[in-house]
Structures are given as structure tokens and as C-alpha cells.
Amino acid sequence: MTNKEALVLQESPGDGIVLLRLNRPEVRNALNLTLRHQLAALFKDLSFRDEVRCIVITGNETAFCAGADLREYVDASPIDVIGRNMRALWGAIADCPKPVIAAVNGYAIGGGCELAMHADIIVAGHSAKFGQPEIRIGLIPGGGATQRLTRVAGKFVTMKLLLTGEIISAAEAQALGLVSSLVADDQVLAEALKLAQEIARQAPLSARLIKEAVLESMNGSLDAGLRSELKSFQLVFASSDKKEGIQAFLEKRTPQFVGR
Image (cartoon, rainbow, N blue to C red; front, side):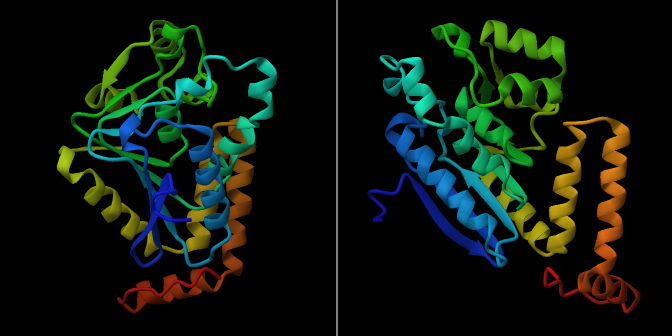
């Protein structure tokens, strides 16, 4: 696949880090089916690559992602939409065991906001915009916003945002807990890569189990989550990275983690 054909560009900006850039600038990186398939395929591949320790996903300076490409929706029937198997395409991102950082400039609305919410950390520029305006065109969110946004912002804020289709600023999104770090527009990618470098230096198995435990906390009871966390805590005692990490701390040196 050439760069002209690739709607998601893959780069390697540092050891253990993969940068994915959405590449439909003419439509503010709107998600058409081809882009969705390419993105899902990349996430599936990266999930099984041991050398990959953190993934950063971004758009460009004007748009992270402006949502679904509505030209593919205007004449679509329920059978058409079922056939697109969207749950599997979103699932490739949601099920990725690697830590994922979204670097957001400009618009992250509709499916773009949902894509950002599939990440584990969101770094946004001051000019970024977030929202789920589906109701304004007679739709509802279909990529998880009714569930993920509710878990972040609570019922009452989520109802207001989804029922009005309001677009909010990055500062408002941060106040709701949707944005992890808010930085100058020209520092978004640099900050995201800095975080990715920090994560890539950590023990990969620990990072994977932490991600699993945090996501589990969103899906079950506190008691079930605590049991899951304890099992993962016990499991890392079988890893060589546990021994290396503790020895490095005691010897006052930088640990060399290998993911085993």
C-alpha cells in the first residue's frame, strides 16, 4: 500500500512507540469504511508485536477526527449498517492490550470523540473541540459514547451533551475528566510522544495488566475488580521484569525491562 492509498500513516518516532496518523485531511479525517478497516488492521497487528509498548494516534493540526463520513450513511439501510460489522472494527481498538494515547488537535466530534475515548490517555490542545452531535442529524452515537462518556462524566452531564449535541472546548472536556493533559496546540504531539516514551520505558507486562485492571473497573463491581487486580498483582511475581525492577531500584540504576 502506498502513502496515497494509506488512510492511516504509521511511523516509528522512538523505541517501542508507534504513531498512527489519520490521513484524510480533505474531510477533517472523517471515518469512512476504508479508513476504519485500515485502522482496525493496524491495531490488530500492533497488539501482537512484542516490540511495541505504546501507540499514539493523531490527526492533523485542524482535526483529530470530525466523525463518520456521512456520505456513506445518507442512503444506508439497517442491513447495510449491520453488514459493516462496526462492533468488530471498534473492538480491534478497544481490545488492544497496548497503552494508547490520543493526541487531539482541532475537532474530535461524533465518531472522532468516540475514537479518542477508545484511548487510555487523551492529550488535547487548547483549541480542540469535543462533542457528540449525532442527535442533530437524526442519529445516535454508535461507537460507544452513551457508555464511555457516561462512565467518565456521569449521567446528567452525558445526557445534556448527547441530547443537545453540544460541542465543548478542551478546557470543558478536561473539567469533565475527558482530557488527561491540556497543552498549547503546537505541543500536543510532543507531549503525547513524551508520555509514550515514559510508558515505553516501563515494564510491558505491568502496563498491560494495569490497563486490563482499569478497564475491568468500568465493567463490574468493586469487589470483582479488586479480585482481578490481586490476581494480576500475584501474576507479575512470576516475571523477570519484577526481579529486574526491584534490583535496579535497590542498586540505584535504570531498569532494563524485556516484557517477560
